[in-house]
Image 1 (cartoon, rainbow, N blue to C red):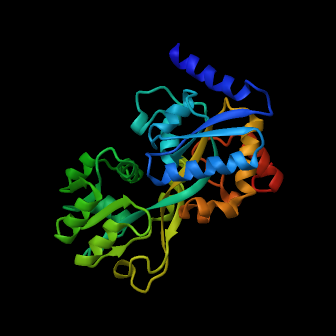
Image 2: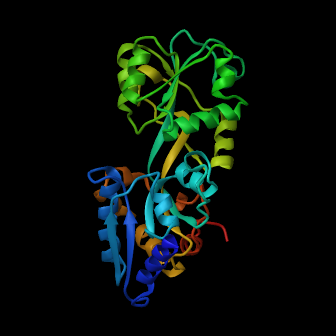
Length: 325
């Protein structure tokens, strides 16, 4: 009952004074972090560009924000594509909770985080062979329960494996903080690693200071499978990002966790249409808010869809030819 009341109050705020004056809440991340900086600046941008709209920027978090939107406590929120997908399906981190069936997206990628698959010198197996045939492998990943550790479980499942099935073949897993993974790699305690960090990842740079290695391309069937099953996009790590791990080779194909702007199906189409229009018609101003927004493009904002696109946003994208009719 309380959750329904909270949701109703949120919608009353949207409609209380009619179309000419509306208030919405936009949740970011922790105060002082990148998401909070983005939300604070973007809230002001929306207020400047959308007459009658008041946007309250408040702290939040990637895992908590989808629930806040689902329950009507926020009308906009920053999230990660796979968090939004998991919340919508009540899987992974959200297993055992009700499905967040109201989640909709406005766009992504408001700053992306690529995955790194690292192979130590002397190791020769590609990714598919590693998981299908590898024995006595020392493998590193993010801390248990972290977003990229959940993605590691998905990667194992893609090849029909689990931690237990690989341990039965002599595998040893080190799931730890990034700095600890870097130390373990430098100290020859792990020979393969899979995790996600923004570029350039300090832990990857740290790994390369003490030991050679190689960044591996993520196979195309994995990229396709993750997009279909989890709504995760793909991209690349540019050439020369990590000279010691890339040498003279070009960009490395990889999975990408995309920051996704989410909303609720309960938010009126007109509100989201105007929010989307204001963002897309002022893209040039976004990097002044935060440097990570320099690559945001409305033309590709809904190319990958971890949750359905809100009808208000879809209307704008279709008008501009950015989404099929």
